[in-house]
Image (cartoon, rainbow, N blue to C red):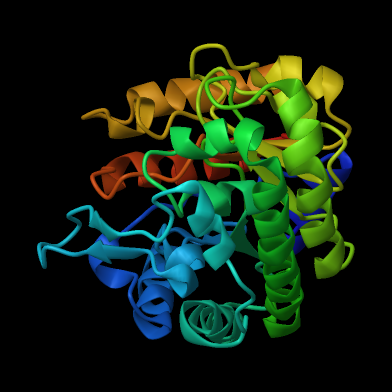
Length: 338
């Protein structure tokens, strides 16, 4: 199998020669232009030859059009700090107005998809990152708890802002596909966990808008929903029109891969703790999680990946060991996954 065949087979639940595998994370000092983001992404792919590439943009690209700014220290891999945001009081939600998805930071990300598609072999699928409309609103204020309160007290303002953001990112999702992305990786950030949301909130303030973004992108078996944080509401997202669900299966309060396979209609993506096993000084903890995940899923409907975006401190030796383990199993005499 080549990478595309392997990924599509895993999404369908078919037998695969080995588990499709990919890892991604932030490299803060190389995310501020399409050219640098793609250059870094290709360097990592060339080294590991992941089965798909989840293009990992800077965390605030999606809110820059409305005035969010972060300050970079100039120190390689130092996390930037929030320096400006537009929503300080309820009336500021009215400042969320339509923007051109082809310009500024959004246009830059379209270009990054186009450049990456030109650089990668055609058999390697690309996932382009978009955040849910509610998650985008959550990045426009500080602290995020302000949005949680305003869902109750300023509902008309919030729903109007959600409409604006949804329309912009629906067009961006389509532009990503036109630029060469095989699917959309739609992430909830805080807005898929019990700390901020109830099941009713998901149905009212997330699902309708998420679905519009995904549908605007066009059908794809590789659309992926990432439900962030511990104690998340993964089950409430089970009907989203995606082929894979991504989450941290090791975080407290979250479903395991095996539990999720019982309730989700598609594939599961993850199994390796991004801030736990992957950060260990030796590869053994990550390899143990990989083997347990493979056993729990029987290597069916499973794409091996981190639970969330990896920190820049992730040891390369751990990633190399996971890649080698995946290939070693596939090369065993008589081996067939699933």
